Length: 322
Image (cartoon, rainbow, N blue to C red; front, side, top):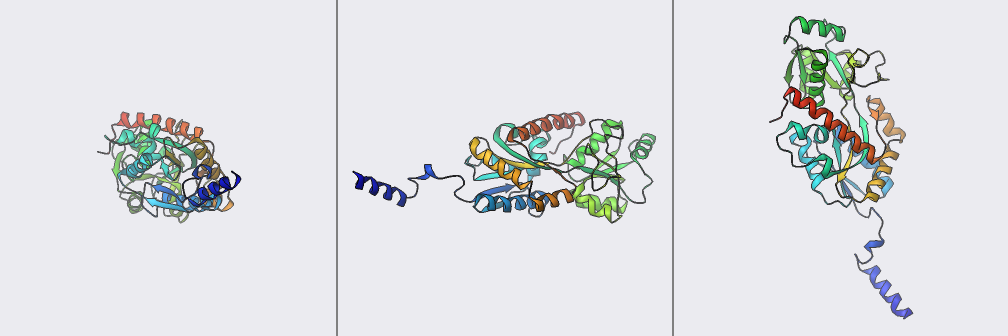
């Protein structure tokens, strides 16, 4: 009997699949789906965290870009993936909290089809004008806009994006009529702002920093609740009297709904560890971003709150992407 047991054990060890129950996660490469093209902030952050995760977990991390439809295509791919922990995604502000209301049809429900893992970062925006602009403060814009309704313009980098929502939130809270000029991306919008084709723009700080430091643009306010350490002289919209004016372009890891809780917890632990890595922290803070972290439950609550908040604004102003 002893010899037979030893032979059975040896046979099981030699045949793949018979001892999988004893394997520990992960045992093969993990794919991170990025719902935007290569080269953007979501892609860069995924690769940065992917390298840390690969080292910590001991398996390769594969980055797969699935851009299109404002992040919907890649996010849907995550939602439809096998919930085994080997496909996760970079979940972003727009597809998780804006697009389900902005688009007539979205083939996934962020609150039901995805399991939040961990918030990574929040990226506040800056309200910017040209260096030679007559507007030296937010108050100057408000006075001019009320004097000539519809005359002033603001650029946005895409319908329903944080640039656009910040502009509409400003109009609503200040009681203004400022004309929205849409662009296909933040870069062309910034170019036209610098060229004097539009009067102002809300832009993510990580994209705006270089132009602000070079003196090509001037910041009037930031959309975080606290002033940025990078631009301590720039006031927040909140302290200028616009209560509740907070908006950031946030992102974090998500997995398909049904992914085992133990795997979600393991990935959450690794992500929180990555956020303490000196090189990762330095890069993120150097771009003006606020570090995320926390539990899966906290990230889930954040997504729910953001979804409720922005869906209300989108409906109030009649915004749509179709």
